[in-house]
Image 1 (cartoon, rainbow, N blue to C red):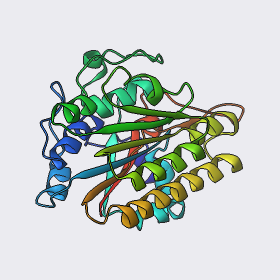
Image 2 (spheres, rainbow, N blue to C red):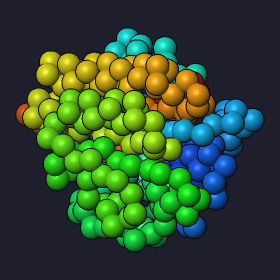
Image 3 (cartoon, rainbow, N blue to C red):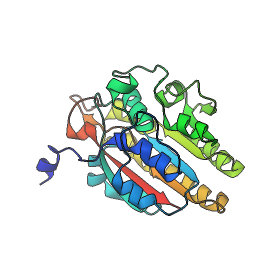
Image 4 (cartoon, helix red, strand yellow):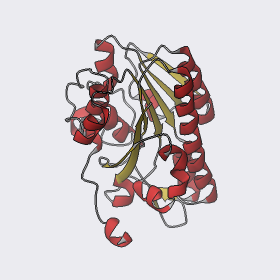
Length: 266
């Protein structure tokens, strides 16, 4: 059965996430976004959601959840919806995050290789700004989420490390002024490329991501008691091991294309 599952792609697609986020907030979808996912609409409807926290760990594939489920326990305990998704090709970071937050395929949003231009296609961030809401991005260094959604009338907090990004996100939650906070962590991806997806240091990074998500969820529970918040653990693509024991991604294969999202309402 495991071998069979590795040959299959998830039927739900990453393109549905953008419109699902805006629908949860009662805002029109980005202009070229694919329709919201029906399961997400049912999950969020009638909940009066007015805040969203999106935690974006890089390169967490569905197969990692299937094989190392216990590493995701802190995530599952803080969410109610587990959502397997198919990402887009090529399955690399800027392409996939451009799709996640525009709801459009690469041929539409324009990033079709590993490069980091500013996306001109309408995005979740633009949709929220038009609706009078305040989004922000918390990311690191020269990473994709620090680059591809620049030039919007919104705030960007670019710091040195994933831990600094998470600490900054907690500060912003306490400030209680943003309707959408997107937090990017690239630590698992960075280590995985060096030691392989299941190398000891990579697995520690995966565990660290779950702990970071739990910390952010707890900050939301403590500081956004007057809001109803959709929280998401939302990676961009998966990964696979290559010869020599290192890791990679970017191929049209189940390990790279199938990802796992988790969503909760607090």
